[in-house]
Image 1 (spheres, rainbow, N blue to C red):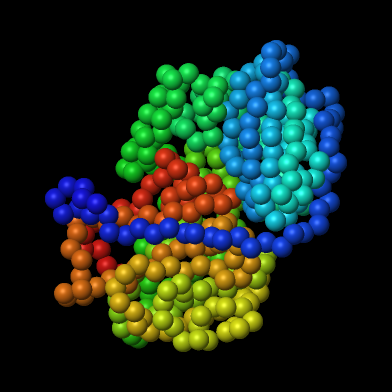
Image 2 (cartoon, rainbow, N blue to C red):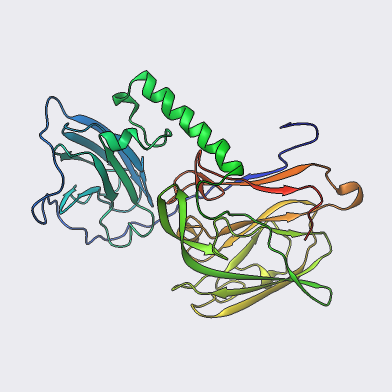
Length: 363
């Protein structure tokens, strides 16, 4: 894809994560509309505004919904996952919630008119909110102020509002390339230390707060505090060592996706190694034997949850001599989906910043 002169986007890959989740039991609370005096509400008028919602492991789609003020709301919820889920909206001291929805089943949630503001969407099954089943309902004037197009209810918007939202989304993306509007930048090159002829990369696995979009801060799992994790840049023939410190509250491992490595360095728990327990460290060491190209590393323990929550990163094998690819700039852009929503380099779509590196940068 040509940009200007010899500027090219040379690195891009898509994370595709197939969920295989066994059905699990649920201790979700029964339907309820009140835990107290109730949240901000407004008198409803006319026919309710309806929305279609799909639940899967572990996501609520859409995860951002805009609704009009002063209208009753109806949510038609279908569980297309393999485990039971609920759909709930927290409105101040009042919670609107469906019954537990079994896999393949549907339910309807009626919500009385809410005042302008932001309301939290969650699945109340224990652990599911933490796994990513969380979203936002924006009502009334607050909805118009959010900008962008993610989660927009186009059925309740004028043509002018739709145009303005899309224009704002494009402008946010362009701005974010050079003037970040979110904290944190993922996929940045990690400079190694050296031990003789070995390149040594230190990586800490931990939970951290990550700003997916302006004001939207979520707890994620990260490598060295970013999503994606740092970019590893090496050459064919390099001897590399990865020193992994696990500061999570659960085990993990590291898998080198697409790389040719000794079997005992492959990072598959209970097959090539025991899991790295919380608070423990583990060392992987091997020689880069593959051709120049783009590869990746990611967790291989509880991977449907850990990878989706941020434990992945790019590996670039650079070419030398005739295998080198000339360019003025490179952008590493990692596409992901799951609890963070559709994102590029860990940032919500249209609110992303690709990592930018001038020509000639090396490890």
